[in-house]
Image (spheres, helix red, strand yellow):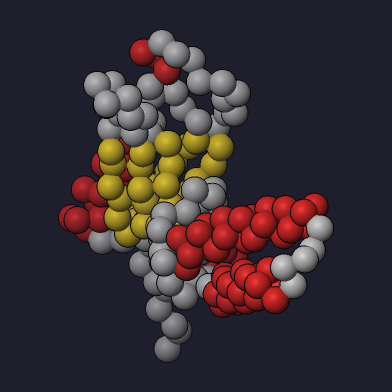
Length: 171
């Protein structure tokens, strides 16, 4: 999060410098002014994207391969509103069997098989406690078919198991 905030700060400083430059040196050639305006718009876009990332919005990046599953929200596809649906996961990365400091929200495209798997994991979380999850890509899909059978195509594979009991130290 620190890199994102540093990037946002630098981007805002750049936009301020561009504004001051345009006000103070108003006699620049139009090519330079145009280039500066395009660069300023690019930095504005990076600020917008960076701000969303720093505010905890769900990441569209690939979830970690091994994680601790906390919760999920499933939005099913809606043909009337032309919505494809999404699955939002709340996970803690378990890279090298070490937990990350904070959990992270991830967004995945809706998938019928993933929906069923995640619902089972949610029931287990409510009944018996945390679930250990594994994420993997199953197949790559180039273009999405436009027929109704496109909903529910498997693009990723999720597997959940109960968190094993910790081993007790020897006496």
